[in-house]
Length: 276
Image (cartoon, rainbow, N blue to C red; front, top):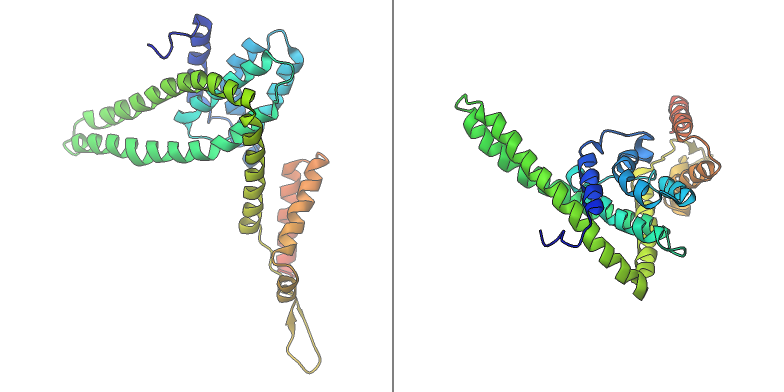
C-alpha cells in the first residue's frame, strides 16, 4: 500500500501488534471510574513503549505513568489514538526537551470526539446495517442470519482497527513534528488544558448535588430554609467545597475507594438524620 510504503518492517510489526491488542483493550477497568480503560490502553501501547524506550528506563517509567491516567475511546477506534500516541512517544524518545505534557493533552483532547464519532459509526450505522441483513435471514430460520451479522460487523470493525492504526501513526508523526516545530503544539496543549478544566467545572456543577433539609425557625415568622440562604450566597457552594475537599485528599494520596466509601456513609447518615 502507498500509505505504508515508507514504514519499516519493524514499524508495521509494531502497529499490527497495537491493532491486535485493541481487541481486548476494554477488558480491563482496573482503578474503576477514575481510570476507566487506561490499563487497556497501556496494554495496547506497550509494543511502542518497549521498542522506543528499550535503553531509556527512566523515560519508559514516565511513559508508563502517563498512560495509566483516565482513558476511554470506542474500542474499534482505539488504534488511531494509540498510533498517534506511539508517534509522539517516538518523538519523545529521540529528543531530550520534548514536552511530554502534550502527549497527555492530545489524548484528553481527542478522547471525547473519537468516542462520539466511534460510537455513532459503530452502533448507529454499522451494527444496525449488519443486524438488518442478519435479521432478514434469521426470520426465515436460516443460520446465515447470525453468521452474516457476525461477519459483517466484525469485518468492518477489523478494517477500521488496522486502517486507523496506520493512519494514526503515519499522519501523527508528520502532524506532530510540524506542530512541534511551529509552536502550534504548545498552543493546542494549553487549549486542551483549559477545555479540560472547563469540562471538570461543568461536570461538578451538573453531577455533584447537595441540598440540605435544615430550616431555621424565626419567632413570629415562617422558618427559613438553610438551602435557600446558601443558594442566595453562592449557588452550588457546598458541591464546590465537597469537590475541592476531595481533590485535596486525592492530592494527599488518599485512596479513592476509601473516599467514595466515606462519602456514601456520610450521605446515608445525613439522610437518616434528615439533614439532607
